[in-house]
Image 1 (tube, rainbow, N blue to C red):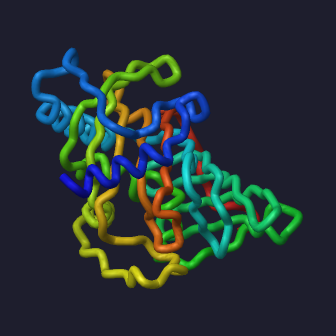
Image 2 (tube, rainbow, N blue to C red; image 1 turned 90 degrees about the horizontal axis):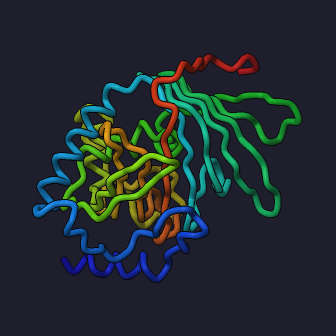
Length: 261
């Protein structure tokens, strides 16, 4: 448990105040005797139910925020936030709020199957360009490709409280997740290749390493919020924290190939 203690202290030292981000920062686990006598067993059952319920979802809206640290994509774009929609099995669109040096800009992205397009920030009009596959970009932008897969492979899970999120009562579960397990689950069991951890400028995903994770599940076993602490690429800050908020489950959404692609 030494690893967990070291990691927890780091999160506490770098925690964002709850009043700023609208959610209690992940830190020391409070006692919740009213929730269950066996928090671990109940947490595992809740996560299993969540994995089943989420697998049945056909579409959802998401907002992904970097609440601590820094994350970069697409040759130096520092991501502030991402908001968009997912239509299963293989479509998503998103608007990325990012900064490049002193400039603030918005980049739009559309993914359909194995194809990915982004708007060219150098163009005045909304012109999309194609990206190469297997760059790790989609796993960072589309929560269905990695973050939601992590829910099914959380270890050392414990119920740590309840919380109201936008009027919805949720149960908070904390644990750790091995990113390799989440990536392999997303790839239907295909082994994930090793990555050189000494390559600090690498754009690919770090395939190994345990990260802290928190999940907020509602009474219908749907995930309403997820927070992940730790880097997903070699270029990211070691203390980076992502927060994913989900809503608008199964509402109709149309995602098509961009007209200017």
